[in-house]
View 1 (cartoon, one colour):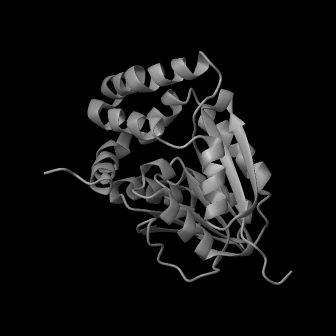
View 2: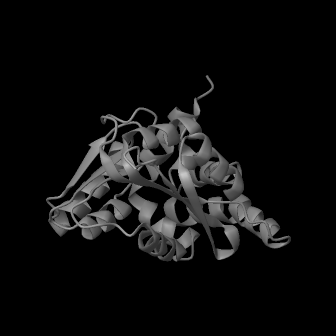
Length: 238
């Protein structure tokens, strides 16, 4: 029987959770941390704010947000893989972060009221959902008026030659690294497919606008292999 994208992705993350952090560092040549740090600077997270990290995985971005909002703020991380959340819980407990809550849930139907969060993030998770627009609309819905919604994700390099190298790397080397380092060839093969098929930065910026966001900002990283998209929910009180 043909698996749905949701079922397939769930199976991938339930299997690779143990090696996920290590593989992320190897695959991105450690760049994913620098990309996230720059994104956080651009977000200018305020103390005492409420933040949601969608598809939080092993909670690295959730923890960075918790540090930024401080002890008076609140951060919720949501993911649909219990095994990934298990790693996240271990990190949160080790760091003793009372302002972090990790919950099991679906990005397609966020279990929160409208206008709840000052910041809503998704890091390297949008490409794995069944419907990009549905998730963007959900993130828009739960953001407060004037709130910021941010996606950090793989993108499509546009430089001739560089793009071909990137596609070769993702198609052949990434699954091989998955096999060698994490014994997970087919799972990392799936991740390269999801990255290959993901919209380019201009296309994703258009999707942000379609979802209702204003003043959409885009920043490409490392020749366009990744990109940040930041959109504001309209402040209806202005």
